Image 1 (tube, rainbow, N blue to C red):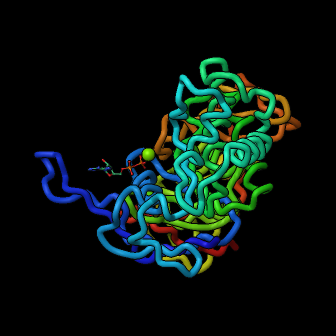
Image 2 (tube, rainbow, N blue to C red):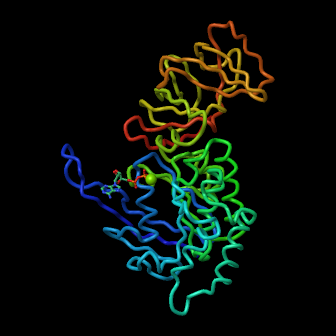
Image 3 (cartoon, rainbow, N blue to C red):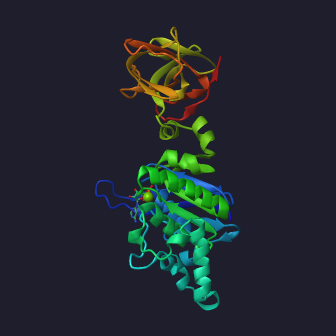
Length: 367
Ligand code: ADP
Ligand code: MG
C-alpha cells in the first residue's frame, strides 16, 4: 500500500510565554512512500517525527493537507479504521497477560462480521509470533522476557491484524547496544517477509541508514531531503543534512574561493571550474583525506588511533569548526605519532561546498 502525503501540516498553539504563537511541528509535507518499502524518518529530537507518524495513523488531525493510503483518502478516517499497526519506544505490554494474550488483544475487540473465534485468534497470534520468533514463549509474562523479546511481542501485536501500514516510533531506543543491532535486523527481516509498507522513526542516523530503503531527513518540521541512504550521504543538499549523516561526522572548515582555487587558510587545496569568488563553508568526509607528505592541507597532529583495518588521525586546524578533525585512513599507511604536523591531499568527491549563510550546497567541478 503506497502512502501519499499532500501538503500535510500540523500546527500546535505554543505553550511558551517567551515565543507565543504557533509551533509548526509538521510543515507542508508532500511526498509519496512507495508500496512495500521501509522508510526511515530521521531528524533530531523535536523536529516533528512523532507528530508526522501520529498524523499518518490518525491519532492527530492535520491542520492542513491530506493523507492517502493507496487511492483512499484517509484524512478523516478514525485510527481504528485505517489498518495501521503501531509500535512505540515503550513496549506498552499488559504485565498481567501472557505473551499469547498480549498478541491476541487487538483481535478481542473485533465486532460484528469481523469477530473471530478463540481458535482463530490463537492461530493468528501464533503466525505473528512465528514472524518475530517468539512461538516458544507464548505462556510467559512480559516480566519474564528480555527487553528485545518484549519489543518483539509489541511488533507481533502490531502485525496480528495484518495492517496495511506499520509505523514504528523509535522502537529500539530502550534497548542496549547489542539488542538494538539485533532487533533492527529483525525488523528489516520481518518487513521484507511481510512486505508491509513501513515507516521507521529514529533520531539515530546510523540506524536509519542501515535498514531503510529510503530516508526522509527532517529539520524543524520541514523535509530537507529524501532519497536512498547512500545517495543522501553522497549528495547532501545542504550543510544540515551533511552534518546529520555519518560517523565520525563530516569535518567543517571556513574556506574561500578565489580565481578558480579553493583556499583553507593560506593553503590552496583544490582547483575548481566556474565557482564564483567568495567565502564558503567546506565539508570534508573523514574518508576524504589522503595522507601525503607534500599534500596541500597541513594540520596539527593530535594523536593517531589504530582501529584494526583503519586508523583514525585526529588533528587540528585554525579554520576548522570543531577542535578536532577526524580522518579515517587505511591502516597500511604510516603516521609518525611524534610528528607535529600531518599533511593531506583530498578526494574531491568527498569534499562539499556550502553557502556560508544559508548552508545551501554550492555545486563545483574540480579541475
Ligand atoms: P520528535 O518526535 O521529532 O522528537 P515531535 O513530533 O514530538 O518531535 O514534536 C515536534 C514539535 O511539536 C516540538 O516542538 C514539540 O514541542 C511540539 N509538539 C508536539 N506535540 C505537541 C502538542 N501536543 N502540543 C504542543 N506542541 C507539541
Ligand atoms: Mg518523537
